[in-house]
Image (tube, rainbow, N blue to C red; front, side, top):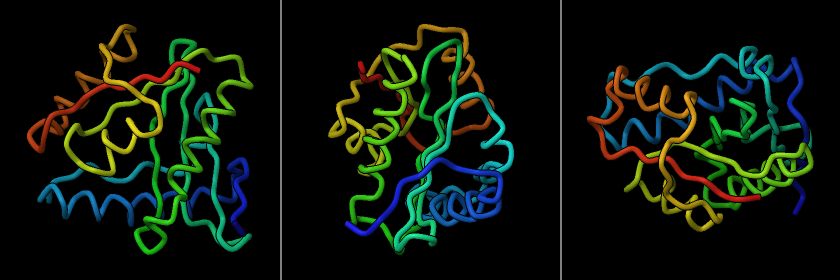
Amino acid sequence: MSEVIRPGVAQDAEVLHAIEMQSDALLIDRLGAPEWPPAGDGAARLAAPGFVLVVEDPPGSPVGFVHVLDADGHAHLEQLSVVPSSGRRGFGRRLVRAALDAARERGYSRMTLRTYAEIPWNAPFYTSCGFLESIPETSFQRGLVDTEASLGLDRYGRRVQMTVEL
């Protein structure tokens, strides 16, 4: 493995946005979702409570990232994106593992996320990483359900929350 996983820094803001846009294009195509919400702002991701990890392959060339929010004192995997040209090479899985380790080191006892149930690189992938379908318990988690509904994300397939114990 020649890749490097490192914390995101302010200079990564534009590349995070670009990676997410490329990654979203794959999902948009799969879902037939022309009215998809825009990719997140990289600077906002980096400034949010929590952390961002970036994978570079080769070192110096970012190909993916994971963004974990601190939400209600819990770790929430907000976004995992890998550029499609680097897909199916294990970068996403290694980013998830690194995020779980970082969350554990920060004292979190579990991590949650929201995703599509039937998209292979969504819920089935996260299941293989140890996540299980769960019920939204906190106000933040219930708010995500409401936000997804207001954005119409559920019209493209069943959305689920998933949790892994750390």
